[in-house]
Length: 401
Ligand SMILES: Nc1nc2c(c(=O)[nH]1)N[C@H]1C(S)=C(S)[C@@H](COP(=O)(O)OP(=O)(O)OC[C@H]3O[C@@H](n4cnc5c(N)ncnc54)[C@H](O)[C@@H]3O)O[C@H]1N2
Ligand code: MOO
Image 1 (tube, rainbow, N blue to C red):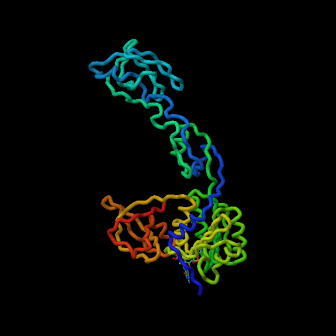
Image 2: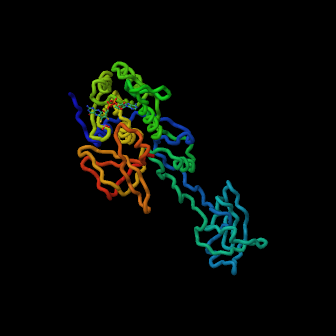
Image 3: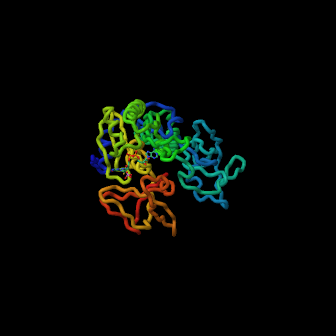
């Protein structure tokens, strides 16, 4: 009987990373269409922000030293030289003893170094009585204090979020260069696998893997170009794989990754001329994973057990190809758990908050089960060199969201 030789999770990751050749196309899109895409250029500001000294309140622009000590009981009168207008350059100058009305966001007159809020002022004929002394720079924002011309704001490889869109809008960037999304194809194999919507006969199971991989890819903002459900038949699998590779950067083949007599993934990859560089990872669940390259595309033979496949996706596919970072929290482990020395083990856990502390409860789970993913809030990882983790230890939990 032939068995595969396993590599560690780190070795598997390193071997993929060393074979990555970035051939993603770059396209220029409108900023409004760039959300969630990966930026393919550094963005340096070509303006100062704000680009002029601005008021942050409705009130009077003053020289702060003019109103030192002003209060309701001893207001200081200043001469109003006029009203600033929004959207227009302010070419006025205030001298000692003068002020000018400026709306929120308006440009300050030359010489002003603070804004007094309108609530702290009273009008008395031509004069404005200031009822409150304020420090220099109060209620104003100086040109370039937020962003300076030539500041590097966004780096190649960052995923564009609503925050990026806000900042890029502020400096007038209307188009950005982005990488095309990573395209995935999913092939689910197995004589017993039935697509949703069909009636289930004894011995058959519904197709979980196509659907959960599709959802994981969409969560990671990848693109799905095709999905196939094929029987355990080498020639059908080989021709489907060829078809899938034409339109995807990464093909996930679910099932048939082990060494059983009807496990055809390895043979199909060899058939089409793919180069298998990993068959077997010291990962639990997820051991019988295959990783191969065909030209510049990657093929993953994902173990058929649903949780094993999900694990391989989260451990390898997601961080490398989707650049997705999952949220982590820390909590106290409430039970001893046993690992499997020599293997990196993923354990589903449920979180509870007790006494304002996060408590981590391991769940009973088998790789053929899918429900523990829903019942749990996330997973903890037992490193390959550890026999287990002790009750009371502080552990890192990777959340499912
Ligand atoms: N002799 C050995 N047998 C097995 C080994 C081993 O080392 N030696 N490894 C076991 C481990 S670990 C896993 S994981 C599985 C992986 O098997 P395959 O990748 O070959 O997957 P299949 O045999 O095709 O299916 C396994 C299991 O998963 C169900 N399945 C498959 N696809 C789907 C799907 N799309 N949706 C829902 N369920 C699916 C399938 O019905 C089987 O029950 O091998 C062990 N065996
Ligand atoms: O990968 Mo298997 O999942 O260890 O059950």
